[in-house]
Image (cartoon, rainbow, N blue to C red):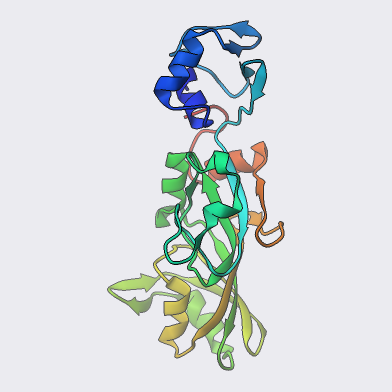
Length: 239
């Protein structure tokens, strides 16, 4: 990645401002002052601005535990944006991976890797997403096999290929889906005359919900690279 673009992505300033900062010899790469705006850097380089080290991740991806009542938008639109739950310095670069409805809680990913974001949303990669679901009346055991066999018409010309259902008690279950269609779980249960009372995502691919509600954490390098592998992207450096 170009040095000026890297600094802009880290909210040091606009691309133009970052070029000016570099030209004024305020930037060091691996301890050496540079004035090259187009210098290519990797995740192993140490970048400093005014002798302050700038965090150098090979793309930033975070896991957020979204509370119910927050909207998956970059700004408030009738409800509070989930962006209010993460530091302001990330607002410019992070984008939400898919979305959770305003009344749905749980695991939400945000990343500044646009290619990764796009591929995670493509049904062809079959990324599993597991949810806790509470419905309004007794769950029937036959739903487990019906959902597994799949090919279920949920309207609007769309079908659910397959879904894995585990009944916890008469009103609560876990369900894993692989496509992520619009309101897929609500439409799937609605097909069999159930209303979804509450919905919480607890797993996304291999990632599990492991932070408190309203909190977030950065993915480790190993987690990030595994996500890349799962959508057929190269791991390691900037892309």
